[in-house]
Length: 231
Image (cartoon, rainbow, N blue to C red; front, side):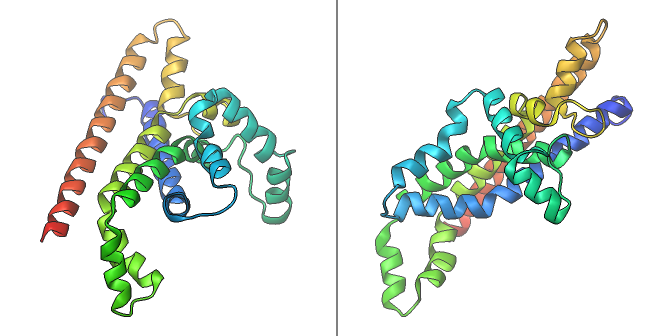
């Protein structure tokens, strides 16, 4: 594949994998916490939190990207704070592409984990509690293994969404070759230039191959987790 792809195409592929991986890993801890709150919590504003989490699925991706630019850009309140105090710049950087991918994939991650949590038999957790385990230990050794297939499925969905994100990414971090140009934006670039059909087709085939590999890996990991639970 390395010989088949041009150097700039390989760079776009490598950057897409990096962006999607960072987006997924960064979303997972918060996704677990938010999913647990939505599935088990009873508090004022739960509906508002649920709406906010799923808002990126409803809004046009360009709108989400523009909101990220307003908030995390160099002149935005969060972006200015990060730059002035920590020297972190997200807009027009690959880290900003990871943030955009995380925001777009976060609802899918939370939803998959939440559904798994709601399907857990509460009697199992109660039994562990009667044996003296505190809530944190019960969540770690009982709940987490039971929802592991959902966590895997949600992580793969988040990864795939971040891998294929276009609108929010190009609005927030633009389409800079070698810095923010991911597979979707590279494909878009090829479609806008004469004779770019071959490059667009190559990257399209690569995107399909990566997506299929992620789905197969997800299925294998979910089956392995299910077998361990059954054992």
